[in-house]
Structure formats: C-alpha cells, structure tokens
Amino acid sequence: MGAVRMTQKGKWKDENAQRYLAYKRILGYEAKKHIKKPLLEPIVITADFYYQLPKRTSKVNRQLAEERKYRPVVKPDIDNAAKGVMDSLNKIAYLDDNQVVGLITNKYYADEPKIVVTIEEWIA
Image (cartoon, rainbow, N blue to C red):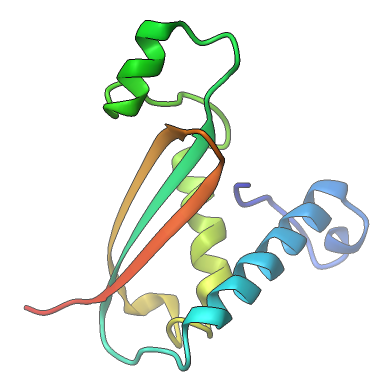
C-alpha cells in the first residue's frame, strides 16, 4: 500500500488513511521482530515489492516473470510504496529518515505477495 495524503482531522475519518495507518502498524510490528534497536549510522534501504501474478497471465509471461523480465506496472506507484515502508521503519530501524542515504526499490511478480526489505549501513 502506498502513502496517502491525510490531514490531522482526516486521518480519523478517511478510509484510505485508516488502511494506510494499519498497514504501517503491521509493517512496524514485523520489523520489530527482526530489529533490536535503531541504527545510528547512514543507511541504504533496498525494498522489493512482490505482487501476485494475475491468473490470466500467459505461460510465456509467467516464465518471463520467473526470470524477472516481466514486471508489474500496477498501483501503487513505487515511490508511494517505498514511502509507506520508510514511514513504518522510522524510529524502529533508524532514528530519523534523514539517515537514509540510498534507496533501491523494485516491483516483481511472485506466487505470493510480499515485501522484502534489506537495510545496510552505508560505508564510504
């Protein structure tokens, strides 16, 4: 799910805002299972978003998807998807998102939808 625009008042009423906040809570909860304390150094985040392959996909495109040569062109936009992940990791994986000095994002097809996030310390 990608980021949504919300006002202080609107986040309690808007259905999309409520879904986004729930999404962030779930991602944060999952991150806490793997992260003991926030990093203090500059970091690089890689976020791979895996979307379920549509049932009507041809055999040729299924094979191309397995080879990562056929990629999803679907909503949400990749920048909004990344924003949701970064928002959910703030204060859990790092103290402030200004520590993120690199961001690599990809959309792929897979049998099951998932998000795979890798966080690495940036070394000059």
